[in-house]
Figure: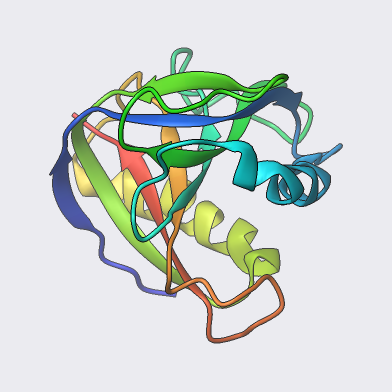
Amino acid sequence: MTMKPEIVELNDFGVVGVKFTNTLKNNKLPKAWKSFSARVGEIGDLTQPPSFCGLSLNMHANGAADFSDETPYEAMIAARVRSSGKIPQGMTRHIVRGGRYARFEHKGAPSSLRLTYNYIYGVWLLSSGLQLDERDDFELYDERFLGPDNPDSSMFIYIPVK
């Protein structure tokens, strides 16, 4: 697998969604996405066209070297909003800090995302000359995402770098 990211500069942006603790071994993401999707209509002032994020919040504060399938991390499933938006009960607002990101495009179903992440952290990062920054990394799902079982789906993975 060869994937060369685009290095991009992002401005801060707001999201509204649900936070929870996750591990790769006991992955709660599919259930969280399903639950969140049923409630997304409750969120006010979504970006147009709508886009959604799966975030790993400040995952790199202690570096990626000690991360394993059992390492707990704070995750968030959210929708991008233009302003403060309506925050439904049980959800929270979060600001994704802008800055320099390596943006990778993942094509195919989310079930193969693990392979992409293994490449990013196991191959690309080690040879890139860049270092992880202590900001959120996230997946961005927009109109190119055609559904979880569609092999033609596309999404972006943003990795904070310095």
